[in-house]
Image 1 (cartoon, rainbow, N blue to C red):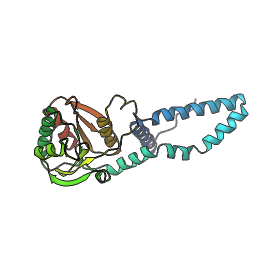
Image 2: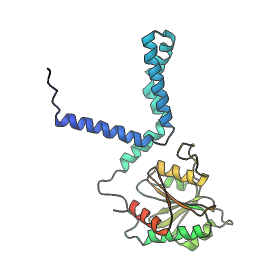
Image 3: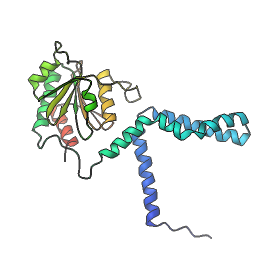
Image 4: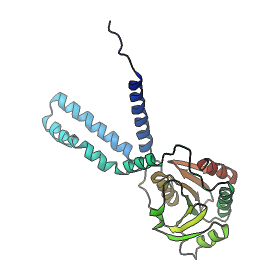
Length: 249
């Protein structure tokens, strides 16, 4: 009876790294159309293997040529996911998350402001910048660089304001820009039930590490988007706790 091959520390690390890579790819693709595309590719590959077994020469030739360029095809199809994945690797920090200011006073003011806007049924999107810069989004709005205050936000978000429809970027406790028109991502199983404002916030949370706080104009509900997660919050205290957790050192 043959003995089992010995597994050394290098083999263990090899298996562990592959497992982490597979898990990371799964998290990256979860909730996107890429999952359906991968399932389709697996199905085509299975049909190709079956065609080889039963001798379907024409089908085998067509699909074989298609699969021959699969690496290039995958790079083209998943270029968005690859870009986001590499960006997330670049965002990795050894010593914890980025903080928004040194204390929690600003986050408390932001949470209070969000619920004052909610009570007044004034809808908006706050984009809280973290490690990934949001400069590309600022180009689609009006740069302001002003002290954060409820009074200024009410003026910016009033129907008479030319920037009332767009998102607001918060950078280092200041209003960096307003009236930002965000791209609307393609509909997925995760976003099918969302409105336009929430889908736009989801898109930013997928593309960057920013935290998006959405105040619904219709219902007054407040929702937080971050790291491909959607978290409705019930009150100011819950919102504040969520924000503190995202910006904790």
